[in-house]
Length: 435
Ligand code: GDP
Ligand code: GDP
Image 1 (cartoon, helix red, strand yellow):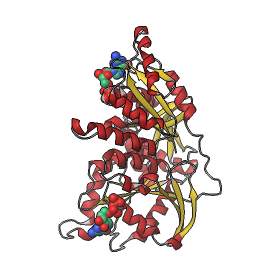
Image 2 (cartoon, rainbow, N blue to C red):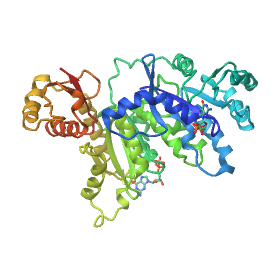
Image 3 (cartoon, protein in one colour):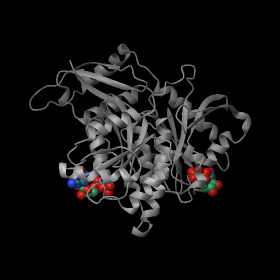
Image 4 (spheres, protein in one colour):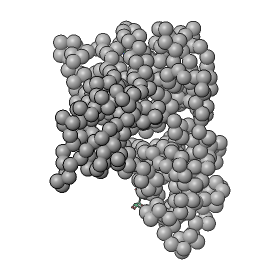
């Protein structure tokens, strides 16, 4: 679980430039490994060995100019709810504007760390212009130039300093953590109510180690698990419209804090772009995934079969095609037990450890039969492989020329691993190492 840093501020101050600078280095590595296109407004950053998530809230502003101002205020409020640290960006070129003052007013009331960041300080002349920002009454600020990166080191030092301590997972508590996520109206609250509505299933109510999220322990259908609820879900009534931004923030929080996500989608809407975003978010965070196709009661069964639906989804998630899909109707309480049972299985798959001996016995003959294609006349020889001692499945393949092994071959290896071992519902990472 990593902490969340939200970048807020009015349009054009340089939020997305700063965002790109903060995530750049690490994202490049992640993308090379997973080959997954990244969300342009959400990414991971690493500084002084600490990993954290960064959200560019500006990327989620919707609507025309006249609703802009209200949007920004709302965005800031939501960022305050969900983030651990808030980076407030202003622009030295334009000085303090009315919108800056509005945002500052909101932020002054906040208990969470707020780092004021004066951007576009490209020269020493500009440095002299920064002093007016003391008028925002947010204390000291960080003069930076996102475009060149100048000053961002100091900002990052301060960000890392302000992050909450890494929450040690309670050793005793090895229960699976499930999070229910999905688009607005998919039926998440209904599912949660169906699962936990009846108080008697609640074992204890522990305030989470992170401020806003609540883990509640349940014993249901004979399984014990923690349901990761977020402040967002509880405070839903505060936000009347369902902003995409809001649901992304909520999902990020819930996903990072869980082992397996129950991705609820509305059968009448399908596995659309926004659902896919949440899916890849979970995938990139190496979380187990169960897809719950809800409102199955509304679907004409002769026009749409479970097989057709499943094929459609798997086409998009390939080579990760063993993601379990459960067709449910929360309304009719259909297959809700199956959903939880499947989530428990995925949880077990995620902690599966294959012995090195067994892994090599299976994989080496396959590799021998179908070796990586030679590149520039050089033969690539994979000598052995091993599962890394990480909390989720990652595999290292040792070979003479690791940089020559391309993504299609890694996908082939992933397919083979999935075929021979049960990693259903679990993202797999494959690394090539020099030997
Ligand atoms: P956002 O709307 O807050 O996300 O702002 P953008 O990141 O899109 O930046 C708005 C404009 O400011 C772009 O033209 C950027 O190139 C420019 N900009 C961003 N950072 C700097 C900086 O450090 N110095 C200067 N001179 N321009 C910058
Ligand atoms: P959330 O925004 O994802 O929390 O969605 P809700 O749980 O509030 O559900 C949105 C709407 O879908 C509500 O009107 C529910 O009654 C309805 N709904 C939820 N599950 C089902 C289902 O299985 N079948 C049908 N027909 N409607 C459902």
